[in-house]
Amino acid sequence: NLGKKKGFVIISRPYNGCDPGLNLDIVEKMRELGMLAIPMDFLNLDPSLMSQDYPNMYWAYGQKILAAARVIKETDNLYPIYITNFG
Image (cartoon, rainbow, N blue to C red):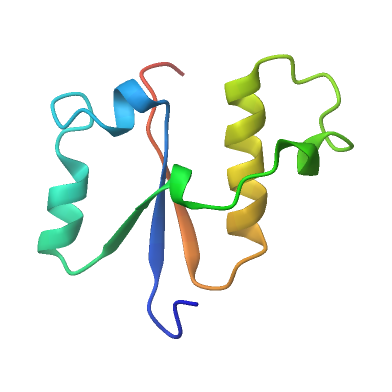
């Protein structure tokens, strides 16, 4: 429970979210601003949550990203930050 504090979930594949060179050291920049950065792996992710909404999502990591998005949507004071190299 975050109370009134806002949490910002870093949604990414591990090679983007865990590499400060690829993500431009966003976690440290957020910390300097007093923001709480939360890796998406810290969420209770259940890919079966997405099975009815996106039954054709083939990729396992895509299912994990969609599950994280659902948890964030349903949790007060959580906000997503999506890091990708494409698109």
